[in-house]
Amino acid sequence: MLDLALSRHRWEELTYEPPRAEGYLRTYRAMVEEFDPATARVGAGVLPGPQEAAMASCVRHRVLDALPFWQACVFCTAGV
Image (cartoon, rainbow, N blue to C red; front, top):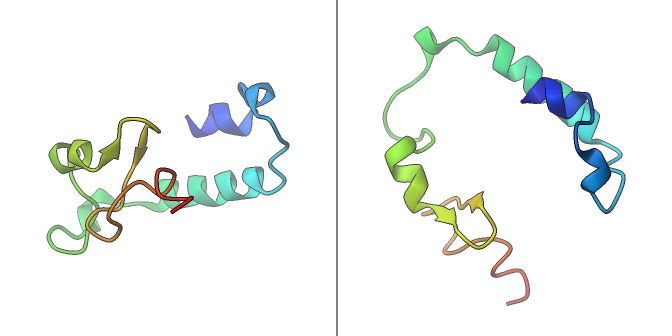
């Protein structure tokens, strides 16, 4: 996925030119490459697992919500 994004796959569908996207993608790729599952923390304070993530998704916008930190999707509540 990161390789596709870095190759600008389907970027022509965007309505703007993301000036910092490539740098962010490269930073994220470095984080993923350095991740060691053997030393990953398990328990409180980590991202939700597959079962919990589905409950924290906005169906309309197809993004994960950071429940319980936010009460709703950031896009649904942007104009509130």
